[in-house]
Image 1 (cartoon, rainbow, N blue to C red):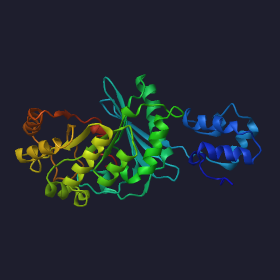
Image 2: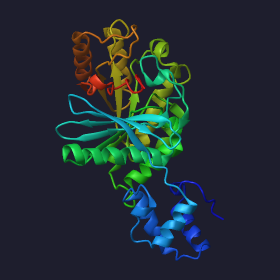
Image 3: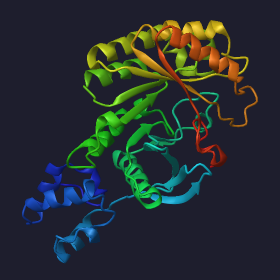
Length: 346
């Protein structure tokens, strides 16, 4: 017996078929409902116009669709859009639309708050209140896809899991959301256009490889020296540099796909040649590329943007070693939508 009163999107296609059989409806109705939910992104049952009015009323009586709502939207001078997304229980996460000349990227959250406490990240200063459900992650993508069409007249091209939370600590829901986003029965986006960013949970990186995922992997690294990384990322105490190397080698051996390292250079913390050499050595362990990220202040005086010369030094040393490196300029800083700033003022 299917439990009624819950969000219908928690049910599989087979369970919806079972429900329709139980109420004396023809099972093919389930396929119609499933298509409305995941392909057409229906927000309520009244949109399901190929169902009879009586069937829609029965669905409304038995189930809900706990769709997110964009509670507040901010637009940056550079076109970036930040959304405060209200969930069914009143909690709020943030998502970001990042437009560039060639692409439009959705940056989505996976947790309310964060399970971790990286010192340089605004979200890390919040406690984790709960994991997002798969449909709540999917809904963020749908909302940004709609904004992309509305404000830019262009389709959404890319998705990054770089918003609030650590995706690998909400593993099942994140993978279910990506399945709905990439499935022909869902949004039908290519997994090659999706990047999951993690601070580095070694055993879960291996699990990704074992599960045969098709999307891209990025590691938020910021130092390849254990004692330095541990000083601002406590996760490194249990997932040290050698553990990450082993997990990433396993990822590459299983998937054949390069890893992207995200790396912020801070003044007086990791801006010396010693740190650049350690990064080069780390990169040489697994085929990879490096995004050097401009730091976005969150009110913590310990972390300051490094001088341009330090970034130039990193790029030079990496390129001499044959490693692709680029400096990634942050967007949306004026609305606290840039990397590391989410939840700063919420």
